[in-house]
Length: 383
Image 1: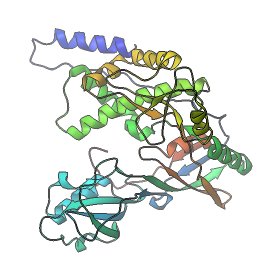
Image 2 (image 1 turned 180 degrees about the vertical axis):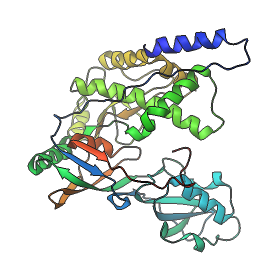
Image 3 (image 1 turned 90 degrees about the horizontal axis):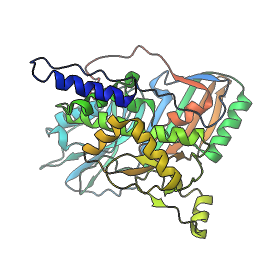
Image 4 (image 1 turned 120 degrees about the vertical axis):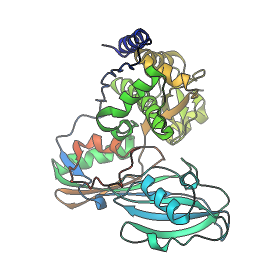
């Protein structure tokens, strides 16, 4: 059953049951997430995140902090906890509302991450001394004139350790060099879609029923997952056509980490910026409004939207404006070191909102290690 057929069946079911007191169950389809690789599969295997130290992420920021101001900025190293949990601890210890705690992005729980938070200052700087320990470490702090907003960061620096790596070291080295020079498709990672694509199924139910969850954060996550899915489907076609890293007819260029685009001009300046990898081909982040894409690219993006009308129409009804995102992810600062014949360390920087798994998937069967995680109250429902 197609996405459209499932939607029509669900809408019909809801209409027929409108005179009953019992609400009808909406059956969401299973959305496939087997997006193609850019390069031939490598006969290599390995595991990442076997322990928190294996997955390290550090936010980068050029913000110049002051000696005083209405918002206290804290650069905190955390391990074994997620961003929402730490934000709640800051709110509790500082005696402020949770919504007044600022942070630029969500970071993994099972990792060592270093990120910025902002705490509003009412009269005096709150005493957070009781917070610091094995889980949280304050690295530095300062003051600024405004709350830290989502997405307001320069990017992230990664240090990943792959363990139990098997396969040809020479082949893996060659693949890494190829990635450093040419990049990888800029897919949204699997964590965007939840366990077994649960966020996509919840998005489908939200759009069909028209009922948003009471938790606004959950609704935002579901809608974003649907939008990301359409983007990945467009990139999928570009990969299969070997056009993910080169312009096609009707191309819209964009910048790494940006959500805006501009039409292809075929100028000498544009060609030079392309040669320097300053601009990239893009795919639509679906929403309302006229797309910048034309010709073949426009036809591609429209066809994907028509294949998934529940998502495309549902996103438009939310009033979200159409944007662009690069279909190519470049990692020119990618470096690697073999600590042992089966242990590989990767280091690289990515723009905000880009996924390290886009690199790992091109190295073979690199899977997240199975661990007996602590399922305590520190697990945030939204993640």
